[in-house]
Figure 1 (cartoon, rainbow, N blue to C red):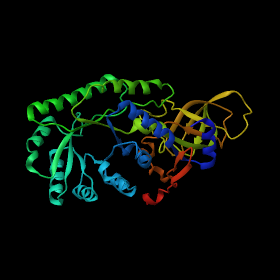
Figure 2 (tube, rainbow, N blue to C red; figure 1 turned 90 degrees about the horizontal axis):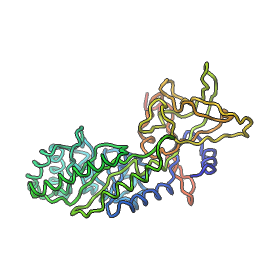
Figure 3 (spheres, one colour; figure 1 turned 45 degrees about the vertical axis):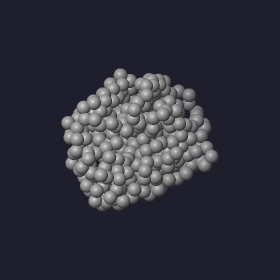
Figure 4 (cartoon, rainbow, N blue to C red; figure 1 turned 180 degrees about the vertical axis):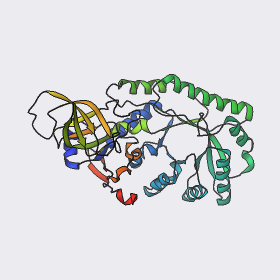
Length: 388
């Protein structure tokens, strides 16, 4: 979205607000899909649940990790056959409800969780596929020994088929060496399971956790280079279906956060700006106390009368010293009423912020496309009611 369009939107839509450019989103996802073809894409909806309808024709699956996320899918009338019910904790009532709604694909992260899904499938008479999640050394997934135990007992149920494995260790990886090592490990484990257990996987779902650039000092060409290097790992044919689970990498670049400057002062030697948003709305992976400067646009609302730049520290509206958005930001003739637009905020910020802190309103959310213009998908929400 160019500067002129951002300026028009921020004045028309008001602040604080998020705008997600669905044209940009679709263009990016199509490019990723083409580079990684014929593998399939699975969208982790925790990255931004407001984009699931815009992505529906572009991804093969949705990773759903909580009952709330599943209710979002039901409300949006998503194809239940595209949903993979995942998550480190699954309650029996939630598994049953998902099966009753028609969900066939599940991941299981422990022997106990596998037994739960198996029991629900048997009692409801539903045919389901399971991906066994392999741990990367943290709380997620299960050990190789537990995977082998489940494979040896897989014939105990006529309703459950173990379709393959799932593997994900983390996000914001910017070194192809680490990603290549992970993919090599999990594919080697698939090979060993075939040789030692006679298990033939139909599907391998892998979350590469490709890193995205956020800050002005990041190498933005690295984004495309990393995708090309990852695609080069996939050139050989495989006897199973590869599915890549992605969230941040697909949607981060399509988002904007718009906030207005509401106060201005000089505290000792520091030039201070106060915005009507704050850290409860702005969330970049790797940002802490404004140590880095994200890509942003300054939108003045007056003719510039001074050409000299000054450095400003931008704080949000929360009553805490932690609510600092930008340090030493060079601006020209900045005034109350001007706007700041944060770029690359399409992933996680819309759901990860500390929204209930100080009971301030949650931002409005818009989807934008060139043909449809801005579409309000959520009004600003008062949070004080939830804190009383």
